[in-house]
Amino acid sequence: MATSVMLTIAGVTFNVTPAMVGHRFVVISRYSNDKNNGEGDRSDIWFGNQINLNGNQAWLDNFSQNGTTINVSGWHADDYANAYKHHFILLYDWTKGSEITRKEVTNVTSPDIQKAYGNILGSNQARFSTNFTINPADVHDAFQIISRYSNRADGEGYVADSQNYIGNRLLNVYQNPGWMYQINYTQIQANPAEVGHNIGPGYEGVKTYLIKSKLGDANIHNQYTYGDGYAIANFQRSHGLPATGWVDLNTWKALGYSADLWYGIDSYISPTLTNPAATRQQRIDAMIDAAYKYMGKPWWAGCSSMPAYGVDCSGLVMQALYAGGINPTSASSTHHGYPGNEWNSQQLFADPHFMNVGWNNRQRGDLVFYYAPGTRTIWHVAILIEPNTVIESWPPCVMVQPIVNGQRNIIAGIRRAFA
Image (cartoon, rainbow, N blue to C red; front, top):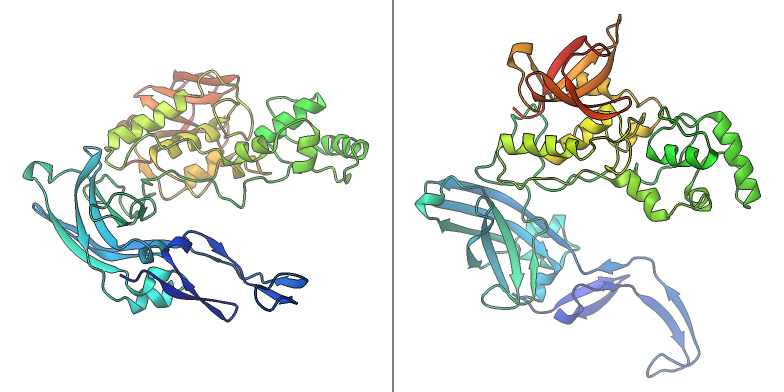
């Protein structure tokens, strides 16, 4: 494996040594009166096309099992491949929570990978293939592959691993049918486009509640009104800010809140409480455990953030689903506070990626949806924890209740997230 390569930036070619890998580079064009060192009186131009030598992409073309033999092939393009001479494939057993074995492999040329990922120095020789023989007692365990470049012959020392193992393939793990939401085996992340959003008329959610708390008109139906906008505009004028009536980050900080809170409220996704080897029941338990973290918290309209704050019914369900590894695209915890999204229970009920379950087949972990009295409009969702008991967010708080009571007694249907 090569220990140095040529790198071209802005039409200028440089020799890259192993010590340069992991760094970011930019070309500076300089005129100088010092012909030897380029110092002295000088005029610089910094070019904007930077190169970051920290590229890391990997994929498995085959990860299959035949009895005690596990076959693996794929590719791992990594800038560190030019610095670390040894390439190892590690077999990780999620059931046992430990590595089973590893093998050093010799990569072969990969013009297809270089064509797609030519900005990564190791893309020209990235393909590998190997197999493992496992103990007969382990054949039903859940396995995943780690691809590793190392500077040592034992695969330790300085290493560069494929990110999140190689996340596109796992063996012997529980998964939903293809038409349902697929289970995420790594932590679900908030949509970056929604994190840090401004607050204006019609918005709800935790940030709105905290803003209204400063204005002295916070309540459980915490919608940001035009009256709030006028009050914020006056506040902005008094603090030398543009009087838009919308709360942006600068206004938020002027109200006395931190930037970390501004982004943290939006980006909170309940931690995945299982590992890839988790069974169906363990994922359902993780979902319900996450819901219990909100027990006693107040019902707040449009809220779905961390357990330190209030949450509404669909907001609670979304965070619980995240904990089990399900990311329902028909709704999101951050977007839940946008205008018109308080009733995300309606989108969840209509979502074709959940299984429709008959009343007599209901099970722990199913989602129970309710009609508003006298209508066919979905207005509430709860999580079944026992045949006739749910955990739900309903005014005044998150609580455990009978599946039917005097306030919400018309069940619209049952939906299942884990087949």
